[in-house]
Amino acid sequence: MKRDRLAEVLAYANVRAASLLVPYANRGGWRAEWNAEIYHLCHDAGTEFCESPAPGPLEFSRGAFPDAFLLRRDDVRTHGLPGVQPGSAGRCALMLASLAAAAVVLCFILPGARHALLPLHLTSITDLVSIEPAGNAGAESPGISLQEYLEWRTDTEKLFSELAWYHPAVKNVVLARGRSTRLSIGIASANFLRLMRVPIADDAAPLAEPVLVLTRPVWQSLNHSKERMADRFADIDGQSVRIVLLPDDEDQLPNNMQAWLLVDQATLQALPAHARGFAFARIRSSAFPAPRAGVRIMFETHYGVTHVFDCVSVSWLEWQPASNFLFALLLACLALPATTALPLGEYPRYRGRMVFSITARRWAFLVIKLLLLIAVVYLATGSLAWGPAWGGSTSVFLQVIAAFPLLLFGFRWCLQDQRRRCPECLRRLSSPARVGQASCNFLSWNGTELFCVRGHGLLHIPELPTSWFSTQRWLCLDSSWRCLFPDGCAPSPEMV
Image (cartoon, rainbow, N blue to C red):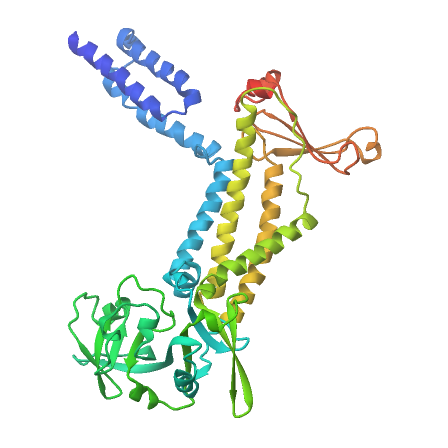
């Protein structure tokens, strides 16, 4: 007898545990039905009408779990997951957040985009400039010849406190164990890394031999992902060079080079005089006027011919993608009023403590949509413009041209989506219906009517805006409409 009582108690416990899987709206009725079946099985089996013996209560209660699971699955298919039902604000925010996450992954995959869009350490070096031919700011192609660099080393002491130069080349690197590979190498002056504030011991002292500075990912690919430096020397063009690794957190160097070959002055002068490269310098602020858009002008007269060069602040170049995007954002904000209506509609004023929370939730949802949209467009257009390394002016033009229409039409979608949502539950309104006739527009309103599926209210959108009905209006429904929306929730007391 005690055993039967224990089986009955465990059966009721199984039903209660399984009821946690049932949707909350149906949980009470479902649990009462299963409890009644177990009670009938334990106290009134009625075996005289059954040829086979009835199952025990504990065995019978095990069927509550698959029944609850199937009920939950059908509810999810019908209404969607909690918070992300079709048309809900959570579903919209989740979609935008997923796009933003995909744009972040794309930005990290493309080295050029990661280098351009993420803030670097160079932004604190205010006196570091890149010297380039006039009108070629931010170019990806070398523009300063070796001869010009050698002349500036002796003629520009009053303008620059330090000057460095490197020439991009592709060299075959042979390691000590016979492994070889071709790398894009910057043949640089001995003080290049010190000028860029990259701390390595070999850059501070005079070079007794050339030093090959490798990034850690390149070294691991050459050394089969081993951290320990098994090869201390390499051979480039028949010359032995010593290998040094860059620190892990140094990402402020130009990203188009896999390695840097630091050579002394004599080796650098052995290059052809017309070899072109990139020049960087530390300026003396007293020798230049205030920069305009991060650019200072330098004039050089040689044999009666005047050449103009731009001294572009490296810190300004680092923020160029962000400034280009802000320019496109400003253009989109100025063009938005000309392409769509800005008002979100007329909503009645209510008294009650929940009015502020409802209004705050609507505005918070709109702000979240706008911020996520801006993040998606910034990362996506930045990856498109700077990821493939098109070049300075090409990347700037491509980013602005791509960001402006995406921002403009994205803002239009945000406003239109906000106007088509219930102000209380923020669900998309549905079931549009035509109301009235165009011929009676001046006597009664004519347009489209949408309603909230949860019974919060109706939205009236005029077909032809008039002086007395110029924008959409929201009409709240009181509790008497509750019977028409059995799957929804009753309007809050503050909204009636």
